[in-house]
Length: 285
Ligand code: R5P
Image 1 (cartoon, rainbow, N blue to C red):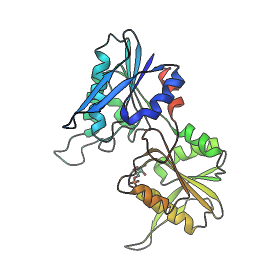
Image 2: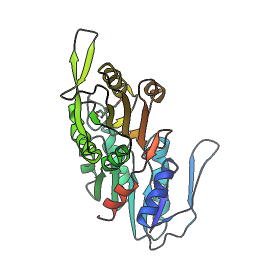
Image 3: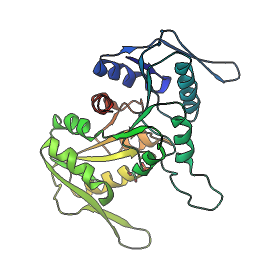
Image 4: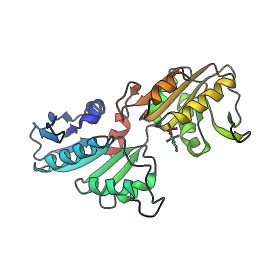
């Protein structure tokens, strides 16, 4: 068994190889002077089960994934499983206006063309998995790992920024062994929106806001400001996918005591790996 790691997913590829007891393939990735991508796999993959691991964000990493899949198929491999730790374009999963593409489906179809199985992590809209209709496809949940990580940090309340993802906060809280709640927005007037936990008192408590993705950081920043007003002593933010667009990380650092994310996107807040959860499902397929 071999893991072929793309340049966007180096940390996770190493961890996954360990969990799967697989070899980490020697992969060369370079850019030509015109910025086109060049890849080469230096191990012999004939007869092997191969995992190609690459986050498809930002765009240049999508092309690299397609080249890696193609390079793998140049060997006489046994099976190919494509692992996309963070699936870019997942937020355009329907046509909102006439004339738009269904971007998530477009990417899904291209990935599916070159794989026998597909795995991703906490995909923003689970219906995207259905577009992998010709291969076995699964969505891995990072929340057990986030729960294990937060357990050691003295967290007393786990919060979801909204009711929609409350189930995930609850799963994390069950592992941490603390209470869970979600934040409710209340519009005070045209310019003021307040947020408060639905039922729990956070005064003097260590709280963790848990979300699937931090993109601009706006959602968590607003939640953290409001929790501070409600007396929270320490505020942690934890997410699966740390995108941190538009200076989002610096903005969050002013309102949170610490920020944690997984290795689906490698960034300065990456503190834990989702590899054990990917390996668990991969060995089940
Ligand atoms: C929303 O559905 C998601 O779970 C996140 O809360 C959202 O995508 C975060 O975006 P931002 O960081 O830009 O507020």
